[in-house]
Length: 254
Image (cartoon, rainbow, N blue to C red):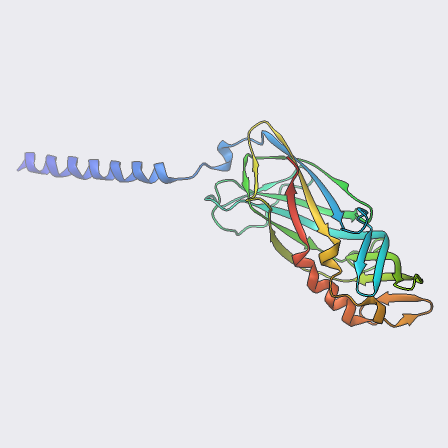
């Protein structure tokens, strides 16, 4: 009888040991076991097909030449979708987390701003950030209104000139209070960051897509300028904001 009990207890112990061993094998690597051995060099940039100058954009009835395109981002979150619940913090923030999120093996890259980007004529440096190695496939951009100059309660401020097909130019000022975040995929199957490497990554605003369907030639002129905001030509502002999500992507420059 004692022998039977011993065999039963021993069998139960072996089954439990095999169960926990199998569970441990399937557990993803915890961030505490990783090290931020790599860097991302982040830039923001713009592009346009007109004359190779990103500040010149073809639009309905003519073209726009931009002198400034200011965007205020409160946060940039670059995500990897493959197995551990966590978020990694960039060097520029206080180490807090936003909580929540799907399981991912590598924590998300959380870069807290604000980031004031003027990308009218090309690219600007956002910063260099220590990150864990991983493959990142999508990014969330958080547009946030700012009370600072030049925004004054907006998140996007654009200045430029519209030139119609007759060659006449008129100033254009666009003010958007767009205060949302949206998610966009990273081109070419994501960005892979290996250990002890520095990877250049660029947030690209495609001005051709951003200004598509904006018939600026039909805009009402106020005091010698085309104003586009909540109270002036609001239909053009709505079209511009609707274009935002499909006009931004992340590119790996390697």
